[in-house]
Length: 420
Image 1 (spheres, rainbow, N blue to C red):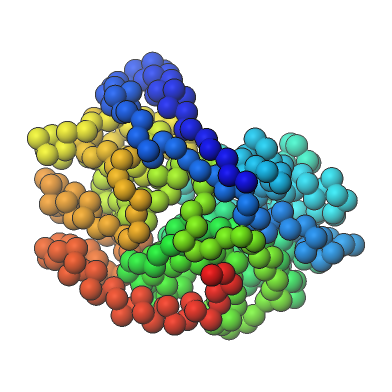
Image 2: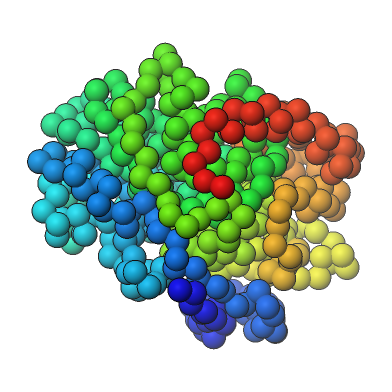
């Protein structure tokens, strides 16, 4: 069954209007958003024939029977109705399992928290879920890897988080640490697979081992074209966990999904990826996180626009003013008008686009401080990309350097694919 939904442009307009009124900020962002006319990109097709791993309870409930279960999840861990893949028509995995009599002892939350309302990079605190009374253990606070003490008393770990298939998106790093800790404690891991909305291509620079971090732990391209379940199999199979240990792993697969099949996410996977356009542009605009450029944080157009106060307005005519909002308490250039570009009408991306980053660097009047080198290196996975841009290499010249790493990775990736 296929459901047709239309994005609520009125909601966006009202949100921006209220934001301007409350903050006393520049109303340019509101004016620009209001002037946008609906295009074909405003029509979203949701394919509810796809069955996510969480919905395939017949495959994993027997593995949880009479077990003390720990669940690693956030607000994206949803079980859908048979005819709808929308957040409104779903129940959370934890709530569903409790209603089925599964013994959940602890919930582990990644970056942004269990309910998904914490800013990027902000520490997540341990706590108690008010709805269920369960203890919530943060994996983005004092520790990113579960401790042996935190795993004590658990028989199995169930992992269910919606990923977006980009190396510096930290959920796959959380997954790696969960696998590692579970292997060390002799606890099996079950991964409930979900579609990767950026699975239709492989592109970008490959991480160099000496630049591994929580923004990228393994030597993979920026966009790697695998579901989170397949990625788990690869990490386990290639011996990428500490000391090459392996975990007792089960992946609950998807049904009726393929790499070229578009998938509309039913909920924000994190606060600053509000819609499918932002998710599609994220691999290209995420590089701006390691620069002085604002990529839409502090607006409702996150990772769909970019700008900076020093860009010349004769070439960057789109203007907006970042203000504190849901997901960004202190955005870059808070309260300052930015000149930039609006990419909301860009065609569907099938590659990483560096042209915007190169263009922004060329336009900047503060080239010496444009790159936040340490942060940019972690996002890029190497020092080479910054060096090439500063040296004036073209996008095509830079991309040619990516090809050997991509080809090496494709050979590894092919061993762990589960879908067509």
